[in-house]
Length: 238
Length: 210
Image (cartoon, rainbow over all chains, first blue to last red):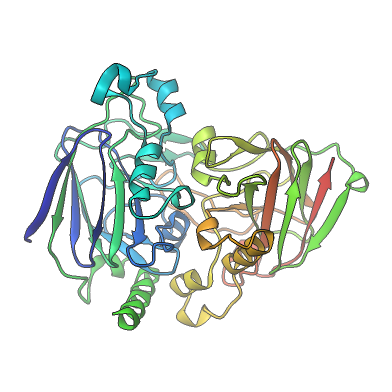
């Protein structure tokens, strides 16, 4: 597939872009232990957004992996996980904020550390969201690519260390024209006592939409019906 | 499980929310809200906002992150999007409540069940109407991921999630003490396509104590 764009995102770096349907975003964990916090919106109807509950209950899952889909809150698919070296990605634990980063890693401001200062995921999300006319109201439960958090029978959560290795990648295929907002801040439950966000490579690749036997649509009848809703939307909108 | 010492007769406000209806009401800091499952296994889809600034509202992910646990019960602090405590659960005779399952919508009904279920009444429509009646400027963007009191959505260690029959029963309740002035928005769930309401949506009662 033709590569349209490539960028190395520094640890705690942030990025946002509209990626049209059919194209793919490949994220590669360059050093191991990376986390990519992500939010997704319909690029044209930005009040339509990634919905953690519909994604989980629609597919009877607690985590994301190939060949599952990312559902919007309007009964449609935003993206599908079409390739995945990792097998488990969190979407329930949210993201760090300034208070959590300061409590965990100590204060380290720009005056003191210049561009080695401590960033947090909430600020990164809010900064990138603002560039598309969005803000605090749009900050909903996000995806945390490369991070695994498991629940015991009582609902207590544990972060699984060493889950994602250097070179692991995950690839999304967009099913709607999608605004992607992401950052490479550490997962809120990352047990590393040092501030150490890892680099991630982003690549956007040309591609086609799903074929008739697509595994992401076939895995659940809910995904197929959501895809049919995408078809209705596209037929009326374009 | 923890029982309350408050007597229902002492409540300064009582209201029965029929199934499929919404309710929006302010709870002052220090007041206690009881939500009572009158007939059992009835999901009460619930949101909270700061009364002063509705941009600050309940955050499911911050609540989960704060307690590093999925289920809500006595001792759970309901966290806002700004990292403040909105309310704390101070009594609970059900045992656990969900905040992963979200609210049903007509659109998600087509995805989850069948395209012809789009016509059926759903929580997100109730949330939208209740929010608009509180403040006209509120829109779909102001409906975040909610709490489902009395709803049972177990997660397994291998990463599966299901909607199961409720663990609530007639007369069970949850009680929350407000840490600031908040507005509570409830959609008493009309869902008929899964067991979240025991296949038979029924009323819940709300009581407010000073």
